Image (cartoon, rainbow, N blue to C red):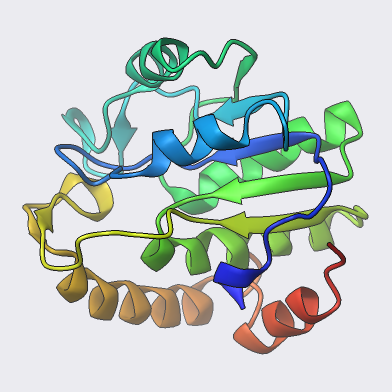
Length: 198
């Protein structure tokens, strides 16, 4: 469902979640470039400098200046920085702050396929908590090398993408138990996606 809910009509913006280093973002920048300007005119990115959960001395991702430079080199000019966020769930909070402030109603959530679930679980939770009527459309690159070792969540040592899937699902299950106010259930997400109009 996540990979087949792309919008059929233009949206207000693309929320681009941050990824780690050395190939962890394969295809993500190119995907965003294809969506600009026909699908969305604006890209929202994490306004942080790369800080993650392991402290300021250990970067989790390249940072906002690197993302702006890469997007600009692809011809993306309308870029908005959110407040800094250290992880996916915080990014969702900061992104929804901007959605609310600007009164947006249709927005794309862009991430890699195996991290898109967490992005949507937290994003839908944020809009529902705030009582917003917003349509979030998940999108991801359609092709990835699943055997390629890349840095993963919080910049941890490279492992094959396929192996990251198991860790990600385990992490999601733990987070949903620990933070039920920050992630909707899988059932709630399925219900949300099942009525998502094109």
